[in-house]
Amino acid sequence: MPPLLDATGTGRFHLAAQRGTTAFVDARTSETWGFNQPHLGPTLRIATGQTTAAEVQNTLDEPISVHWHGLMVPGDADGGPHQTISQGETWTPELSITQPTCTAWYHSHVHGSTARQVQKGLAGVLQIVDGQDEARGLPNAYGVDDLTLVLQDRRFDRRGQIDYAPAMPDQMMGFMGDTMVVNGQVGRTAVIPQGLVRLRLVNGSNARIYPLSLSDGREMHLIATDNGYLDRPITLSDLTIAPGERFEVLIDFSDGRDIALVSAPNPNEMMGGMMGGGSNESAFVVLPFAVDPSLPATKDRLPDDIGGSRPQGDGTGVDVRNMTLDMQMGMGMMMRRANDRFSINGAAFAMDQINFDIPRGTVERWRITADMMMHPFHIHGVSFQVLSQSGRAPAPQNTGWKDTMLVHGSAELLVRFDQGAARETPFMYHCHILEHEDGGMMGQFTVG
Ligand SMILES: [Cu+2]
Image (tube, rainbow, N blue to C red; front, top):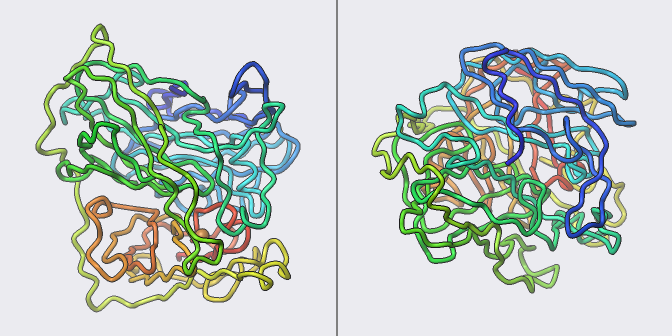
């Protein structure tokens, strides 16, 4: 597990972006970046109902930013591309949290550099807690029966260095690794108690979508989506997690058998087979589990009621906003500048261009159309309801509160804008395939 940085008692935390080295594959080391450690960051724990004073120091030699993905905070605390922290500087936002308990995450978000900086390790998990998980009957012993799992894929060169040099197909499809990395580690096994275990799954990959299941076909019980708990668990045999998404599941290990979390190949491909279609990948192990009966298993029963909620709007009479996620293909893409290959509604992201303004408290129905392939669509500063996906009712895994939605063909989102964002620090909406985001598939809006 990443170290736990619990700010619920102090109401403050300090993160320092720093350079380090990490051995991934064997003794060979790679240059990496992290927060307070050589690679990735600690799991931050903050309390709902509190204001937490954050300090983010940049000791690297290029500008970074830290976006709190999943936090409902105003634009000036959001950490988007307009809030870069220069070399040697410290950013001190106040995080005033009123939203329900959830698993969120933080990562750099500098326009044009996000993909590379996240590959280097500028990412970590953020938990919003309320101290009520014991009463809910949920596993909550950090690193024992409550596991935080950041899923990433990487390529390593012969020297063991993280190899991030995206060629044109990597730009188009998003950069995919050939090595599974969980919490910054390769080839490790999770040792767990013989009982109910909670996994907080965070897809921190640049582009890979993981269709997850368990190696023996055992059920997973979904208890939370991006922005909080469901009302009751949803039983699933598989769960697809796209970049930027978080899901929490309970798995029953009371039979003591060692199984593994496995993934099917990345399902994203160019529609029409322009890239040759399909991949040569086969299914792979994400993380093996080993049951250790000496570890304390405090929960053996699936709770019936978790006490969360599912959004219930129907979207009738709500103004519609259309968004088309566009890609320039083939020669068209080759001819374009690196930051102009992708766009939304025909316009590539421009730092000095606010795309629209929304009055605070407004509800809108966003119709997203995904061009060429699947795109995970994220909106800052909001939590939304998925009204439909591909013209049908949302899949069970998308019936909770979300801030990132994998759009396959089309999706309709019902969004309420409650957090303010001024022109100097607007909110972003973008594809969470980081090469697409850096390439221009992003826009920005104010809420006021
Ligand atoms: Cu995309």
